Amino acid sequence: MAETRAYIVEPELAEYIAAHSSAPDSVQLQLMAATEARTGGAARMQIGNDQGSFFEMLTRSIGVHNAIEIGTFTGYSALSIARGLAPGGRLICCDVSEEWTAIAREHWQLAGVADRIDLRIAPALETLAALPADLRFELAFIDADKTNYTHYFEALLPRMTPAGVILVDNTLWSRQVLDTQAAHKDTVALRAFNRQIADDPRVRCVIIPMGDGVTMIQQR
Image (cartoon, rainbow, N blue to C red; front, side, top):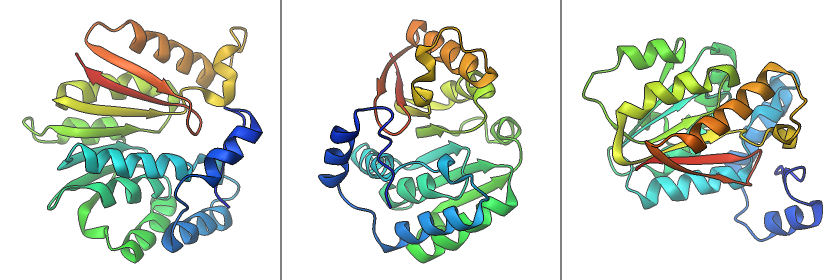
């Protein structure tokens, strides 16, 4: 059931990677099934199990106490990050859909992480602007409307700890970012965002060919 995202790497290698990585557990499988059944064909928006494993391990490895994600959908990424939080850690989730995040809430309860997650239903830039001025994050994840990626990045960067990590999803966009003639607004926005981050002297970055492309960003 786990998505291999073979359009980023060749299918044979994608299958090998999936077969030799940790499999999703029962709660994650239930969440995948609920997302498939209840989101009207939007399940492709859910991150893959490979990303979930990476997010959880990274969160635990860097000792994250405060994390934030922009775009929660049905909660797979939040579940992964919440599992990796340091004792007493908190994850703020920003989304605008009560319907889809209701699925998330159900499965956070099943996974025993609901008490670590603070879901805010409002436009993410409004949520960010309303946070305490001194609140800093060790980890942020952006996976929302692509045309606002630059705005989310700029709002988050001053709120990151010096060694904090920003993760950004879909930055390879099913390889469409390679097509310089593609004119869809999301493709154009992602190409521009990728170029902006690569050229930004404030940060270092790397695009990981995982899922649909995950960019990792850290301040210099």
